[in-house]
Length: 84
Image: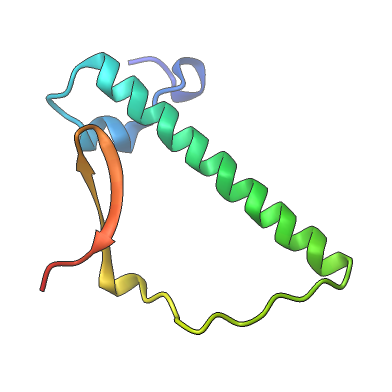
């Protein structure tokens, strides 16, 4: 296998999507890259707002990561509540 930096493959996605077509895997990798870029833009925006003194109200609900899980559905990464 090629070096990840050369091939742009994302190993954990390929492992999670074992048995899927190359096209589905590449689409999932692209979706993940787009997600990371969105997270980066949000982080940069919050950082810039803090520098400018713009405050954000506290949210009324808190996110508890133990209550959620990530799964693949129809070739897409989905964050949803854990089944109890």
